[in-house]
Image (tube, rainbow, N blue to C red; front, side, top):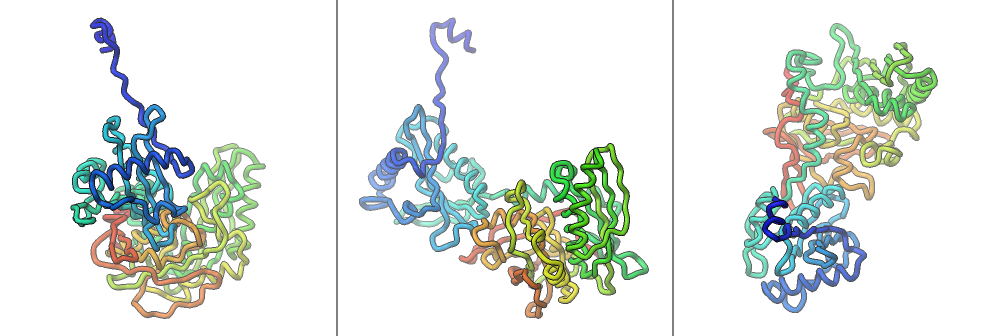
Length: 462
């Protein structure tokens, strides 16, 4: 094509490059965007008188994005927490999208896509925009959903919602293949399908097994050893079992590497009162670790015992912080706790005897709730504002991380719950008919984060 253009004596067309960047601290870019806003919303559309500036323009949480072509601002948009809400709650809105009268092609699309990416990176789980009717088609093409028509200053608009994929993407990556893979296995048997631990037939024994990610064992061997015990302790705790001991299967390239993993295992073994009963160690192989945890209870609690109408309760340790090297993925609430504190938190299901329980796993809070609901043949709603959450941690990050010590339970409304030591406990949702998980927001709006079952294994049965 270029040869043909040159043969005809012309030059290939130059496609302007659109660059989108943050302009929060760029006064010149902010001024240029505000001039475009005033011309569009005040002068041309008449939606405001004199100025379209408002409180969001001075809110330090507001993010402004501008589009430039050859250094000139040709458009902009802002996004910010909904007025009167905690910025970390995860309910944000976009607005003041504007482009110059003769913009380069794709400026509006680039700004909207960038705003969606910024919102999701900020831990936002509900992102909406009130869009003038003439521009709603652009949002349709970009994958936004129409919520309902609204009127703004006498002009028809559409309330649009971006379908945040953060939770669904985590579930797809970690759990969605389990149903097809395990269809012929039905782990645990009827009544226990979907549980992380399983009762041992003919006894009061309970067993679980977890494999730690090989990359973690290779890169962070001490922490991998600690987590091997931690996840087993959580599995036993969710079934209401008393911890009895663990078996480990360890592979390591060298004896020195194996020693680091064993150091983490021994420290966690003491903290969680789970003695190492035996195991297998192999050297000269790639790093790997699997831990089998053993416990006992005469009344095991299934994850599939919930029913529509049951309250959903979260018991979670908000102490600690992001584990170094695992920012936004793993919350370390256990490595500084005493044995007594850990026992008080992890024995709460045994003492409370709910209808259903499950420990929060790598699928995160929402994904784990989806698994409990699936095993119970239900759907679930989570009241976002009542979820116990560390101060300042965005809801989107908290809903998709591994929180260290976190236990979900479901039971009849109004039932008392035992003290969980340093852990916070709150009723923060309910089981419903249907499938999937929905979030309920302070304004009463309900948004869907998981539209169907998490694993595909279905109800626990029994």
